[in-house]
Amino acid sequence: MHNPQIRTNLSNFETTVRKQILRCLTSSREVYESQKQRVISIDQQLPEYEAVKQFVEDEDYNIKYGHGHQLKFELESINNSVFPLLVQRKWILLISEDGASDFVCSDRPVDLISLGDPPENPQHPYNAGGLGLAQKNTELTLPLNRRMT
View (cartoon, rainbow, N blue to C red):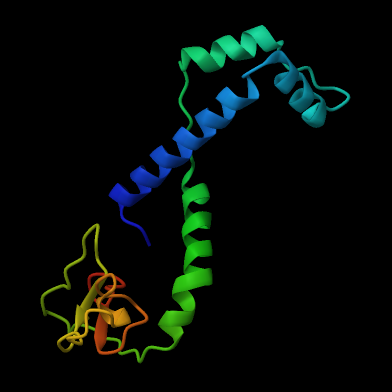
């Protein structure tokens, strides 16, 4: 899963995009009215154009995302790109003995290391962007909790 810094960056990016969409939707009365007709239901009253445009221009609001929103995004990205690569790996579970030191956990608990030197050919895919889950001769560690990794 993403660490808190990456979650913050993703939330900030998503907020920027949503605010830009709001600016586009209030760019003219015609645009606003056409979109308003698309979303309005029988019992629903939406504010008039001038009020919404002023609200958007003032930017005196925050957009907050719940944990479930971010978790859904992360799980979708894992399911679509990461999970198939994880399934191909060989896995070992290490459990610390009673009385032994705990495993180290942090905001960035996942560690991917190379078990050999990368190919010397600079055009080789291994050298394209650093280490990655699809590359052979790498080891992935992921602490599950302070007693298991």
